[in-house]
Length: 138
Image (cartoon, rainbow, N blue to C red):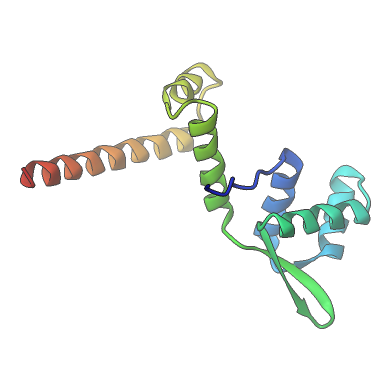
């Protein structure tokens, strides 16, 4: 049986994002930032970081007798996996509801629209290559 991928809560994802942007980083450094942002104590941050380590999202390395944490994968890979799990687990593999959401949500920023256009161009190019390859193998 395939191992179920570890999930991330919203707060864990925010913490992971901060660590991704600032690694390698100590618990003390993360706790100072997190306390200023949320008012939560160092022990809470330590607990979350240990949980992220056990889930396989963080690694830690002792540097000058202090543990420093780094993500095991880039945040973009983690987000891609989260979106994939959402599309397959919640949307039944269909991206149509996601596309509908994009058309009905708040207007996209020009740079976001440009990113989507590039993505569609890449998808069309990949599909054309796949069609050509499939046609050549018949």
